[in-house]
Every structure is written in structure tokens, then in C-alpha cells.
Image (tube, rainbow, N blue to C red):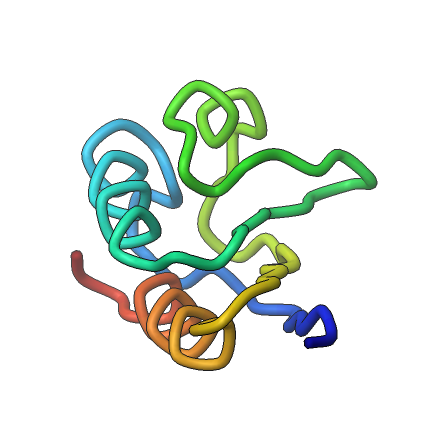
Length: 88
């Protein structure tokens, strides 16, 4: 299995702050794959609310989603859809 990654522009109105961040982590935890989120060279576990919040991701920023595991393609597709939806 190879690592898959995708650069995505965050389009959620409030970025990945507070409630959207919690929903993102909840969504990420549905998958068995190892999931990471990268911004400005910093990589955090996408299943960790503290890690996600530490990146302070705002609307319009580009992040990289990284997945590694049995359901990596599905996880990457769902999380990409999540951050590109204007309303969460």
C-alpha cells in the first residue's frame, strides 16, 4: 500500500476551527487508515482535535491531506469533500 495525498483548499466558512474541527476529527476516526493533515510544513494526526486546532486553519488556506491504510482512498475522498463544502 502506498501513501496517498491530496492538496485541498479549505472552503468551510469558519475554516477548521472549533465545531468544524471536531466534526472533521469525528469523520477521520471512522477510517482505519492513518490520516494526517499538513499545513506550512507541519504535519499532525487528522484524528487528533488538539493537533488539528494547533494548525489554526482558516478559510481559503490550502492544506494537504495524507492517508495510509486499507481505506485510504475512501478516507481521502470523504475528508476532501468535508473541507471543500462551504457549510458544515
